[in-house]
Length: 230
Image 1 (spheres, rainbow, N blue to C red):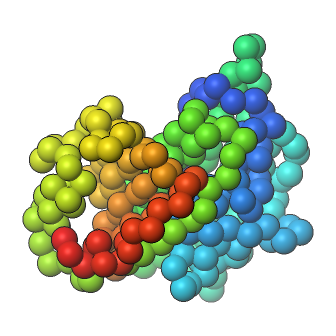
Image 2 (image 1 turned 45 degrees about the vertical axis):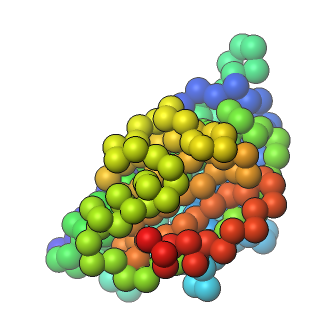
């Protein structure tokens, strides 16, 4: 048993098709909003998350600046993930971006993994949109840190909100002390735009809080220590 899945997301951004292409089809561009750090070598897409590499993707379509797609080869149990991006230019420099994330999760315990993937995919797409709206044409430095195992998620989220100077129920648009605002939230994630870049906090699938930031300016914070203090 397992689950085929497909997650469709779209947005209109005030960026040119060329700027959108650079964000979704180059290593530095993808690293500025996606999970971890991405490299593209020829027709191969490789992404490192912390000290680990997620399955390599093979580029299937590269029609600049309109269509980019890549997918990981299926494993023996059928697992794979595919990413597809469609770019359509509009008048006045606006661009429509459509994305499809699809694949197959094997086994009888796919439900929890699918939930985490769905919430994470929503956060990273929101980050891509935020990047294109506020930092078009720029790249960011990815920073990833992991906290200790979490036994009480509601209490940990409350502690995080307090540490960030947010209320107990933060919503997109809420301001941050020192500048910036919340740009996204769902039950497993929180996204913030700050003077140093785009900061993301995720409920890690393996039980730890993860800080996965895309920094556009230097930030000396020890994010591992920050997470341990929650």
